[in-house]
Length: 93
Image (cartoon, rainbow, N blue to C red; front, side, top):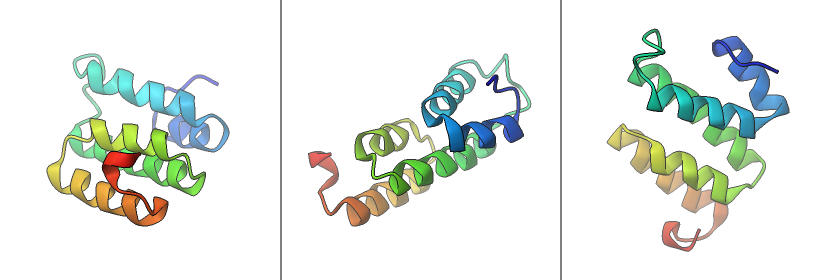
C-alpha cells in the first residue's frame, strides 16, 4: 500500500502500522515536501497511531510516538496514558 494522504494513512493504520509510522516520520522530517500537513495535523495522526499501538499493547512503539510528539501538552498526556495502560513507569518502557 502506498500512503499519499490522510485516508490512505488511516487504512495503513489497520493493516500496517509500521508503514504508517514510517510515513509520519517522513512527513515530520520533510515539512517543505508536505506543506499541506501542519503541526496540528501531524499531532492528530500521531494520536491515532498512538492509540493503535496502545490497543495492540506495543509499548515500545507507543513510546516512540510519544518521543517524537512536538506539542508539550500532547506529549505529557500520552506519557501519562502510556503509564496507565502499561502499568509501568515511562522510564521503564
